[in-house]
Amino acid sequence: MLNTTFANAKFANPFMNASGVHCMTIEDLEELKASQAGAYITKSSTLEKREGNPLPRYVDLELGSINSMGLPNLGFDYYLDYVLKNQKENAQEGPIFFSIAGMSAAENIAMLKKIQESDFSGITELNLSCPNVPGKPQLAYDFEATEKLLKEVFTFFTKPLGVKLPPYFDLVHFDIMAEILNQFPLTYVNSVNSIGNGLFIDPEAESVVIKPKDGFGGIGGAYIKPTALANVRAFYTRLKPEIQIIGTGGIETGQDAFEHLLCGATMLQIGTALHKEGPAIFDRIIKELEEIMNQKGYQSIADFHGKLKSL
Ligand SMILES: O=C(O)c1[nH]c(=O)[nH]c(=O)c1I
Image (cartoon, rainbow, N blue to C red; front, side):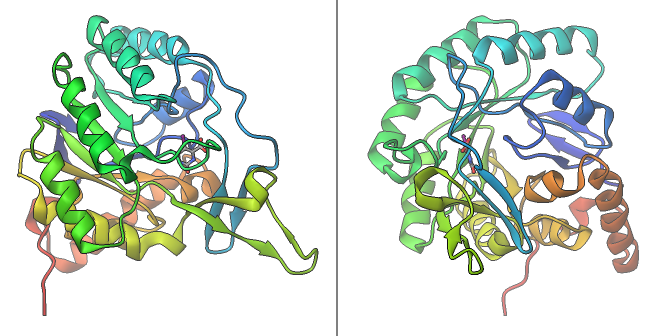
């Protein structure tokens, strides 16, 4: 009922983790593999291992989350070794997603060259939207730099590649980004990353709640669903059909998932709610989405995918 075709591969369902949540270590990744998730993705890696920002750097909130992790990860080779071992041992499983987030265009190119030359046959997610490395602006908010990087990437990279984008808030920005992205043989666009540099305050302590960046951090969860849905819909209606959409942002229930699918998402990534509930969330959300589809008389996701009505 939830069978999903994405990047010319078959998945039992559209659900997966959002990069950064429950995917830092092999233990985390193995738990996701053992869960009901249809797919899973690694923590965005840099070439070298990184400690990330000082703690506390992640807080769950009533309506979502705030984080300024600072790109902590165990280094590119750790994740490449894992995905290569995994794809050898579990050939029958669907492809795994490998996320990278270089600290510079050169570092992104270096990692993508290693992936291109490796035996990795899964899907690569180029994260252009990490908001939490002090002094490093989000690449995807620089349209020229984004176009320049993608032009260089596609002079050598031939494996399935998607880009993880930050939220945009201006229709002209959707137009500009879509025009850039439509030039390239991208497999997908993943919208959205956290809304960068929000601020959550504890009025009792009269203080911020995370240590890095004077308390400024990426906002996720229910807070960002309207923005996430808008970005999914904006790119779905602007991108060439060969570029699929992954919907990320505010997915906590089957209804949230249904809304993202209606807007045009094909795969669905869960971050904040997965952090709060753990991998068991996939069992619950699959049942909730199936229940909604039964109530509406839909046999498959194709029956309503992208069919959001205007008034
Ligand atoms: O701070 C992080 O590690 C982080 N945090 C986010 O909210 N999104 C990202 O892409 C990343 I790379």
